[in-house]
Structure formats: C-alpha cells, structure tokens
Length: 390
Image 1 (cartoon, helix red, strand yellow):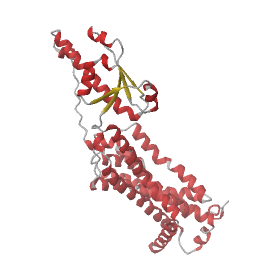
Image 2 (cartoon, one colour; image 1 turned 30 degrees about the horizontal axis):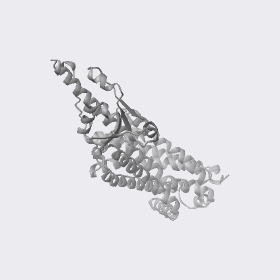
Image 3 (spheres, one colour; image 1 turned 180 degrees about the horizontal axis):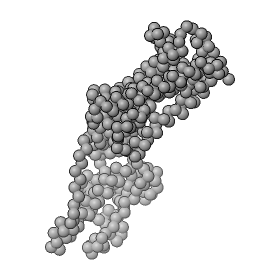
Image 4 (cartoon, one colour; image 1 turned 180 degrees about the vertical axis):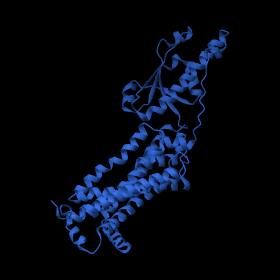
C-alpha cells in the first residue's frame, strides 16, 4: 500500500513540475504577502521617520513672532505658503499649512484666546504624521503660554490641571508589532491554500478533463491509495509554499526599518518554528478540501474558479481578527483556519500557550482532512464523476 501511494505521489509531483506556468503561479502566491509587507512598511517608515524635518508653510508669519520662534526652536522648517496652498494640499504636494489670522496679534496682546488655523486634508494618510507633529507643537506652545500667563498673575499652573493621566503601557515591542503585523498570519494561512491549488485542480479535474482518469482507475490500485498519493503531493506543495513565504518574511523583516515606527518584530528561529507548528498542519485539511471540491469540477478551469472562491475561507477569520480582535478561548484552536491564525498571532506576540492549542489545531486539521479524503474516495466510485466531462 505504501509503495502504491509513493508511486502516485512521485508521478503527480513529476507531472506538476513539468508545468512551469502552474509552478510559477504556486511560487508567486506565497511571495505576494512579503512583497506587500516590504513595500507598505517601507512607505510607512518613510512617512513616520522621526529625523525628517517638519516642513510647515505659514501664512502671516509676521503676526506671531513668538510662535514662529517656538516652532523653529523645536525643529520646524518654516516657509512662506504659496497663494494656491489649498489646491496644493488637495493635490498632495503640501501636507499642511499654518494660517495666522489678522486678528491674532490683537487677541494675543489682550490676553484672549488667539486662534490659528492648520489647513490639512485628513483623507491623505501620507500627510497624517506631519499633521500630528504640527498639532503636538502647537499644543505644546499653547500649554507653555498658558502656564506663563497663570504664573504672571500669581497662580500656580498646576491648579489648572487637577488630574493628570499618565499611561503605563505594559505591552512589549513584540506585542505592539504583532498588533500591527497581523497580516503575516493571514498570508501564511493563505499560502497553505494557494500552494497546492494548481496541483489539486490538475490532479482531479485536469485528469477528468483529459480523459486520463478512467485508465488511471483501471490500474490495480485501490482508490484510497490513489487519492492518498495525490493528496500527499498537494500537501507537499502547500507546505513548500508556507516555508517559502515564512523565509521571505524573515528576510523582509530584517530590511524594513520597523524601528522608525516604534516596532520590534519577533522573527527569530524559535518564533519561526512556532509559526510553522501552528500553520503547517492546516496544509493537510486545505489540500484535502481542495481535492474534494476539484473532484466535482468537469474541467481544470472550472476547478480553478471553485478553488479561487474557496480562498475567501481563510480571509474571513483574518479580517474579523484584524477589525475586531477577540479574546482567544481554548475551543477556538480546534476550528481549522481560525485556530491557525490565532496561534500564529500569539506566537508573534511572544506568548507561550503550551502544547494543548497546537495539538487541538493539528488534530482538527487532521480530522477535517480525513473526512474530505473519504468523501473524495467515494466520489471516484460514481460513474457521473469518472465519465462525465461535459
């Protein structure tokens, strides 16, 4: 039996590696996530880099000399704003413009609240860091000036702040990074589906379309051994995709300046092994489900359509976890896909959950794989499946 399964396994892998187009697609999918990660976080780091000077065009600089001196003292590069600054802000060539109204000096001298206008386009993410830095500087100036006015009137400035809230953040840099890098577990789970999708489509629906499924079943090979060999070939491609994606993430994280965002990603050897232990068992279930669905398809193209829709399955828990993080409970690790994404996220946070969640996630994937393989084996005994190609 093992010899028969091994023969089918080697035959399927050999046929798949001959198809360079399908093999290229299987390789590109796992690299999609690391590529997006590299581009996106490099852009974010360039926007948020602290050593970049704050460029702030100003309208009416002469009306607020003390404010201008304060801004320049704390690193702001001030310049005269162009006449069409509103159009430039909308177009994205300017991040923000500070406008000092004509009545600023009068209100300031009278001890009243003097207003300044910060003209921005809040819909542009690229300008968000510049806007936040300008807000912080303006607020700091207002607090300093308010304290000076109270002191000049003989009032202790602390009386104006009866309660001061100081936040004590207990999160580690790894936990903070995990909350931002929640896309990594999602793309690793997607790799388990994407890596074997092409082979699962060809090994069942492709054989059926070419008419090679009937002579294949005429060989003295039990249908269970035939399905097991094809499944193992699909699993090996899915595992290879996960390994490729994880290695790519480890290389990319070292090249992305996460320190500029105040993050520290935990991607050392133990973390990588933990993520592999969390995600790899899902390849068993994902490959079995893909083969089962592909068996119903009458052509390779039809199977690709079905399996592309199946890719939505791992995205749903990922989106729920990203938009509304939930407190993990033991039973969740027994749900395929959800359990793997929760486990991978906890490993990124540096949490040690013990062996039970890993065993639950692996066992649930194995059970799901067994059930799907049994259904697939039964389908190969139906004439409609074997002979129906139209």
